[in-house]
Length: 297
Picture 1 (cartoon, rainbow, N blue to C red):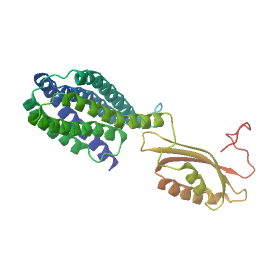
Picture 2: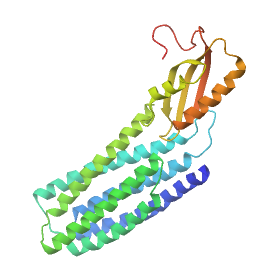
Picture 3: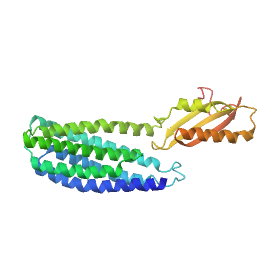
Picture 4: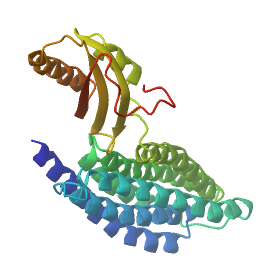
């Protein structure tokens, strides 16, 4: 089932890539013919999306390779690298579009409204189809790619509305204003993805797991005296790694440790921890990780 999901993810990204790349060429030509900075800004975004989709596709396939002696956790984090690069490219593209759109607000230029309407309808159809292919993706890489395409689809809806308004009341300044609104919206959405990727790279504890709650529940298991030296991080936002030292009662028979391990495994699974590593210690036994200079907690 997991292998099927990996293949499904890569397949969806590949379809979205070819749709996006083909339409980007159409956008650039359409933007030049209509003299619309809003369409050209979408073309820049879609060109960036094509690059990021290619990266995401490659890193997604790479992330499913088995682990090696040098990459002991496998290639899962490569998917995160793709998501990070995609986000940075989209952020840069949005800033570039802002530098082109703002002067057009001060000095509006004529645009070809009928051409804008045609391009907008086509844009909604192409990007909407790509979004449907990626809807429901669980990995950060998929979510970032879908966010790119969803924003493009929303942007084309906005272009369609504005072009229809200009068809009735010709206000060319609406074109660059729309471009600025789309770019600011994208920046506001992409920054949280960059923050999430950086948190994972820096091995922050996963946001959805309360480490104090984990410690509390571990220490609630019978025959466990204390849990300390706890570490919790995520490989790619989905696969969480956990390690800790467990202090057992010093008179506990060795045969009981297996039962405790099973309870721990079941408990940690509830917190979506897929790779736990536990070291048992007995009461009064010095901790192997403590140097006496700081608390071992």
